[in-house]
Amino acid sequence: MRKVAATFSKPLLCQSKLLCFSLLYLLSALFSAAYFTFSATRCIFRSSPFDPIQSPLFSYPSSYGEHKHSIPTTRSSCNSPLYFSDYFDVFDEIQHILANSTSLGLPPALRYKQGNTDSFGGNFNIQKRLSYFDYSDGEIEIPCGFFKHFPISTFDRISMEKCDGVVVVSAVFNDHDKIRQPRHLGSKTLDHVCFFMFVDDATLNRLHYQNLISKKSNSYKIGAWRIVKVSVENLYQNAAMNGVIPKYLVHRLFPNTKYSIWVDAKLQLVVDPLFLIHSLVAKENVDISISKHPFFVHTMEEAMATARWKKWWDVNGLKIQMETYCENGLQPWNSNKLYPTDVPDSALILRKHGLATNLFSCLMFNELEAFNPRDQLAFAYVRDKMKPKPKLNMFEVEVFEQVAVEYRHNLKFGGAGVGGPKLKRAAATSDLFVNGTCGKCEGYLLSMWRESHD
Image 1: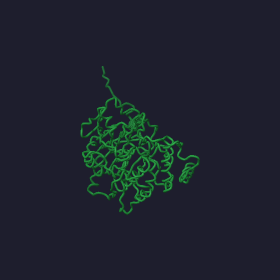
Image 2: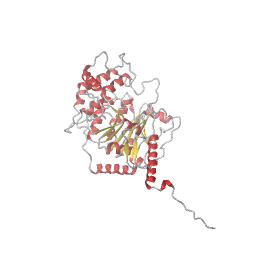
Image 3: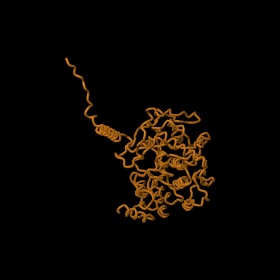
Image 4: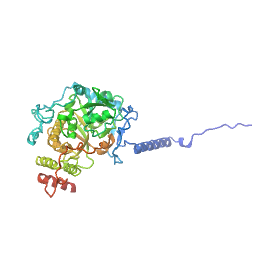
């Protein structure tokens, strides 16, 4: 019987190389589309999916509730994605920048006014504060806090001075927030980035009660965070104003640091700080990087919302602040300004420390002490009036929402909380300008409304 030889032919799909490559491309495209559709970080793209991510840094007791009451984001799409390079490339580049800045010597430094006063910041009047906005000749001494001793331990102070690269700073006063660990840190980050959390006795007592620290210890650490106790009795009566000290005087608390990231305690970082410094500051070649406000572009819009929603208890003080700024040159935002908005979301601030950045921080602190800790109200006034100006990157809100998770503050019952001292409120309306009395801001308001309707 004749044997029939078996023959095998290629599958029809593989007979055409073009068809094979087309199918491969289609499958890859579908996979990428599915990934970016369902990914929680649609606004962030990394060049490598193999970045060395560390495991969770700390396990909290369930009673602490560090992940309760997160605020969901509302944006379902991303028009300005943030691209990250490979982790080790970013790490090497940041180290190179830091080494070069050290080898080139210290940049020109501000000269700070010294003295002893009843107020930590000196409490200067408007004429005095205005005289420090122009630092063109570099001869004047700038008031920048520390007219009182900042009450921390010598051990903590030495540790802060040793931080000479990148520092991440936050603060919780009056037990107003939870301490949350940064997520997705690379394998070398904790060895080269400092994390400092400033707290007062009220917060420290709560951490001790939750068995997160022992008050018998000389130093405190929770996960990535080095906890620094601040004795606030001789600082400010308002807890939020005490938080302004590490927020805006970070360059004085960490005099040898080259870059800093301020993170409001209501936020949890979910992106490695080296990625943020690299993408939002170094690659953009800017001094300060900060998010736009999600709703407002005019300072007066934020001031009116602050009064109406009682974000600050002294409405008459807000009106005086705005009239002071209007009288001294504050203008509403318009397309001729160098910046896309006058109102930031200042919960996350990235800074390259230098003369212009440090001057901005000092001037901001002086305004906040003079009026209130609502820093969005002083932001455009200081930014537009100061010389020399820092180079500023105001990035999109959608990026902010993807690099950090926002949580609600701790609930407080039966007290003034972090907002303000227990003072009798005026019986006035919560509206900033009532009965058509726009005062010294009439020109500002007319220009703002005209701009809004053009």
